[in-house]
Image (cartoon, rainbow, N blue to C red; front, side):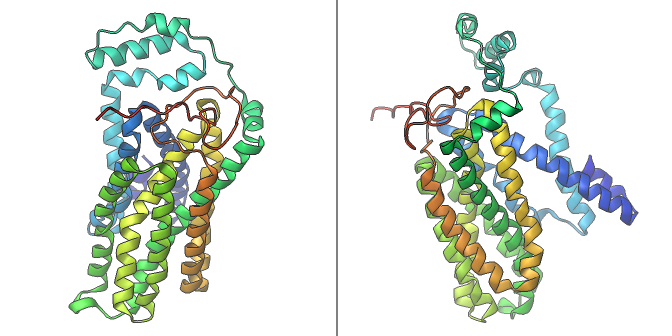
Length: 363
């Protein structure tokens, strides 16, 4: 609705207010969407579904249309359509089973699991399972923050805060960098800067496919670390655009656009897998808040020096590739609802939401 209001507004004051509202409500919806997706997806396909959402971050330039107001329509129409379709589905009546279980809402949990069984044409009775589960202790704000303040949980919050910051720094920063870089360089084979910008954005589409393959096949930490290192090389190489070394610059563009979606979507996925349902929202709120500091820093950095921005982004990507190893390996791990298990070691089944791994199929 904020996007639709921005499209219709003709006043500069209303435009500023609308952008503030859009940023506020967008910041609420995106983390909640990734949490809900992680909680309802099959365990082994959680990474693939999460990675596929990267297409929403790489198709913005191709869908703008004749003016900036049409870009706002592209932003607002998909969520509005999906919201309407969601209300037509019977699942709109329930929250995710993980959330219902963590909140001790057993009656709603039984109904939700019955609906899941019916929609999948399963002859499975889940009433006995749901009614036999113990009520979870509902954590208040102070208890949730206290749980996050423990040594190992706080280290996870710190590591993911850095990862979210560099994710947003690279995303919004490079979005500002590409137009400036292509405008300052000579066109490729007579192409206009707008065409070069469009081709740069289009490289993100195969990057989504790369993200789906890497996140599905590799452990989470390996996928993120490899993608972050390759992205840092890409950020370094795009200096060639500024230095009139187009072969190096184009190599950097390809590396960054192909591997950034992997780092981006792994970062979005990890908070839902590392933290339990009871503290997941609070951890994501803190982490996402730290990440939102990056878009505020981007204009200052790029205005000061584009090279400073590139070197800082490259360094933070390398730092994030090292920090990710302090987190547990959560690939193919079940999510758990409560925080009662002790934090033993980074790969222990008791760390955060990482329960026992799903055994690989024979053959």
